[in-house]
Image (cartoon, rainbow, N blue to C red; front, side, top):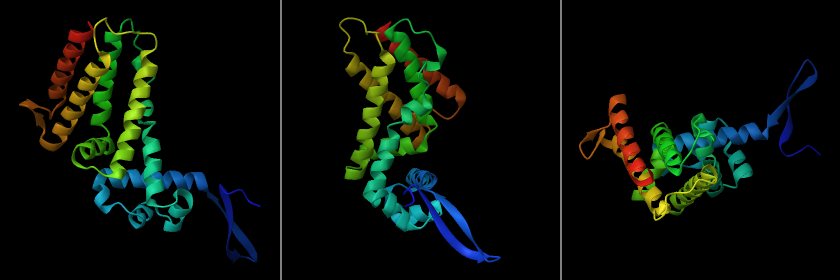
Length: 219
């Protein structure tokens, strides 16, 4: 019996010999997942459905049911994929910088997170949904993102510790919230509280302010 991941299908005979085609399940699953993420990033959940994803992926919709069990399973797969979002976009070595203090770590990671969110339309969508929509699908995506971010921070921290008396969990939550709000404000209106966020120079100002805030708390 053929393995489920690879199927051989008979095509019309050519010269008396049937041509055989190999379907790579892994490649098909990746194509479906990429199509689903792209559709979400561009149109949100309003137009998110099996037929739309299948059209974008260029596959039969039955394959989505076969591989993911339907729309809910596909959303869960996207959530699981978001678990690798931070790891894929932010280097484990924090850009090769030798970190001496917890302040070094948080400054570097804050700047990397700001850059990563600016360049990821799907994550910006998810951030906006977390604020405006209270649905099961959004909760699944949000929980996957939050869990990944917490695990990533813990792994990157290693043996570094914040200064005594500083509630690092609370401070980091506020810093991350500020970064997320800056990115969303820039996407919707190009500014935040009077700070223009349209040009590289504008973002340099925001990054400088972010560094000063981090250093003001962590030294």
